[in-house]
Image 1 (cartoon, rainbow, N blue to C red):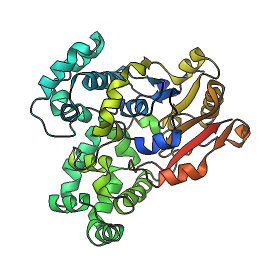
Image 2: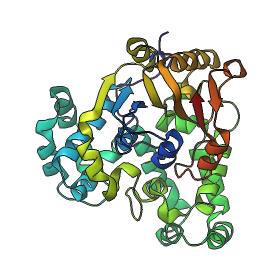
Image 3: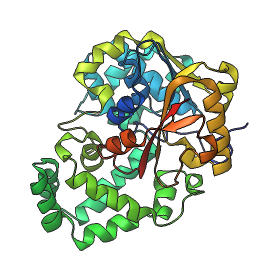
Amino acid sequence: MPSEAAGHADFSEIRYAQCWEDADILLEGLAIQPGDTCVSIASAGDNSLAMLAMGAGRVIALDLSPAQLFCLELRVAAYRELAHGELLELIGSSPSGRREALYRRCRPLLSTEARSFWDAHASEVADGIGSAGKFERYFALFRERIMPLVHSRATIEQLLAGGDEAKRERFYRETWDNWRWRLLFRLFFSRFVMGRLGRDPSFFRYVEGSVAERILARTRHALTRLDPAGNPYLQWILTGRHLTALPFALRHENFDTIRSSLDRLECHCLPLEDFLEREGERSIDRFNLSDIFEYMSEENYHLLLERIHRAGRPGGRLAYWNMLAPRRRPEAMAAFLRPLDDLAKRLFLQDKAFFYSAFVVEEIA
């Protein structure tokens, strides 16, 4: 079974320089047990590294893009070589004037291919490697070109300071939610603009309805029901760095655990379909599938689910996000996969990476 996404999207550049999926809900949904064998869609690597912190015996990070795996490889080198605060500087979470020097310390630990790649991206290193992707540049345009037309820096700072829920609701209703916000948000996060500047246009092949309206509704949830002061994804979108919150893999309390577990991480540039064929039946306990099902037809989604079931061990779990295309286990597979809907719905309400429309957790029978 060939990979459908590989046939339509361009994977030659860094698409995501960070994982824009909340590792906190991912890890709770997967409930990784010590010694588990886990498969993870790599993206930039943050959530694959987070899985190591839960005691996984083996984490296999897969991606179709060498550039994405170079992002993960540089992170691994940084965890090995740098102190925690230096890692945050290299990522761009905190200000720094010495990122090139930090990269030079990590460089000897990289493969020849990764060194060549990052040597050719010196400006991205200087800006912080967490800013190096197409998706991050899209958010930078929003932050630098759109938001100044909507709100002052002081208003943005007031939003990010958070507060209790009643205060957040009142602030959103009375100050934030003006006509400029609604108009420019709908334009910038339209299917056309997002496909041209943010995601690959092929990722919208199976999306129906208004893209911007769905994301706007989820953004209101993030700004009111969730506390912006605890949301690293929102903070990066609006400021280009992390202020008062960090994603799981970048938190100080997880740094040493991840660093001591790096030998349990594997990276492979190949489709999930090929890996499952190679690995064989009943070999995997946990699957972090990101939002890969968005990029394939329902027929291919069902076929891949069948292969995942065959490769999964009984009692194992898979977790994945829907952004715009609805994907859930079909009734025909009820005997093989059991949806953990109550858990998934509870976690979705806590999802700090707020632009997704659903979070799905399923258990292998």
